[in-house]
Figure 1 (cartoon, helix red, strand yellow):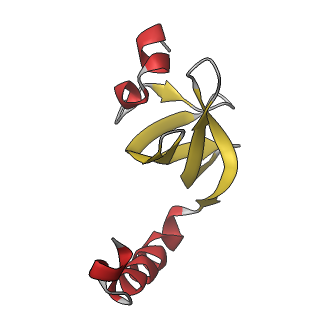
Figure 2 (cartoon, one colour; figure 1 turned 60 degrees about the vertical axis):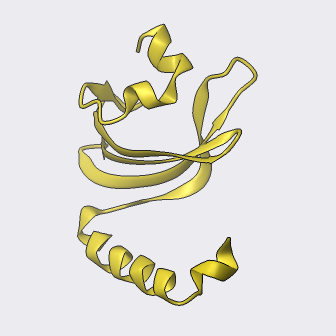
Length: 100
């Protein structure tokens, strides 16, 4: 990873040449700002020979580098359609005017 990618979390967005910590393959699909010190990232990664979707909060350290936190979930891709339905139902259950 280059210094530019470490300093700019968006630089790694959709970079298919990334590697996960266990040497597996990683594809980043989302890198969204949660707040000033955290981001939400959605990656597809290989871990111990299996493919997973990793939805995780990343935090910034004192040096300005992002690291994965324990806040998140890693699921098999077969669970994705159910998760999407659940997210859609949750999003429809509140008034967007109240959330602002």
